Length: 545
Ligand code: C2O
Ligand code: CU
Image (cartoon, rainbow, N blue to C red; front, side, top):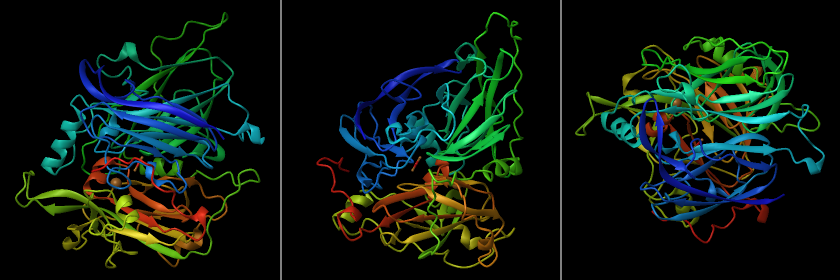
């Protein structure tokens, strides 16, 4: 395996979208940021220079970083922010990941513009290529959101008012809003292709607040991977992709040479919440040979499910399966030593004396604890035995049993406790977590993401998890291996992993408003016996708080 070195300069760069120009935080001046190419098992050293006027951290989403939480990146969880003028050198250790992952800022909402793709090729020298014919070319397709306002202002206003944030002004594909938005037509992202070839599209949802549907007019897609692992191939007309998730698809350019729209728009199951009904487009442009006709000037839009079509959303997600073959075996834990149930809820706090609008401010919680970021990072506190930074009382189950999805849940449950509680688990214990969505204040899908691990999604369903019946339907044969799972609205998802990676690992909703409101927790996975079961020592320099 190789060690590859990169330099990331975080800086303010002017960008023009939707007829107006603003400064955005970028890496090396690029939006979306640079794509990193590696082979399976490589290590990257990334020197991050903060030349912006704003604290930053960088997270390598989906990279497990075995025994090395020091470079994982979430601020106040594994490190203090990199302050303006400082440098932090991060060591990114890849292990079994293969396919597509990504990197993004993990500090306030800077990830709106600070993100990019990580492309992980198979390790050909070990004789294992793709589990499908080698594609003609591969292309990262990154979805994100654009606000005309400065994202820091959007964030601050969101914090102050205690209500939902301003919805974005555009969705983008590879940084461009596309034909349907003002002042955007000439810059629309174009993917130029040859006819009768296979392209590997590496789809990444970097949007801050929304799950998205995506499709390409007149073309079916073959799904072959998600979250840095391969899946059993299947054909589909559209995909659903959660913030944090990546999906690899093969595109056969088997249509008449012309141009076709690819398009993405929001999927939202929340009731009565403003949604953004706009559509971002890009062009799939065939190279025109001699014998082709001139393409129509107005390509057609692909069919996309309606914005609140929960069935369409889960129909897609429920089809993901691990390859589970000889070359790509699976290791689903069977005897579970740690059975956990975590509720994921949107709640409220009394507004009290602060400046929020209305009598309450929105919040969110897991097991009725609304996570507060500490003022120094949990990892350092754990490693150096500093007390008073976090507690170890994160409950294994919600504090009381009630009907999570009842229409009128007891209102006192709407006010969670604030806390910085972690769940401590033993090295190599086998963990099952049932993530239960609740209807406490409002039900919606929650794309839950775990750092430091991939997990098997062994089951999911609507309504309340039934601990007698539902496990009987678990898929232990070929469950998909993911790092982000959208817990369906007022439903549940069951995930399993073996706690073989010692360290401090964040778990949170990847909708940033929920993350900021407190839909987070952290695991501390203890060291095991022997040097290979212990956290690596910290690097010689870590930013300080
Ligand atoms: Cu994609 Cu905690 O992050
Ligand atoms: Cu959420």
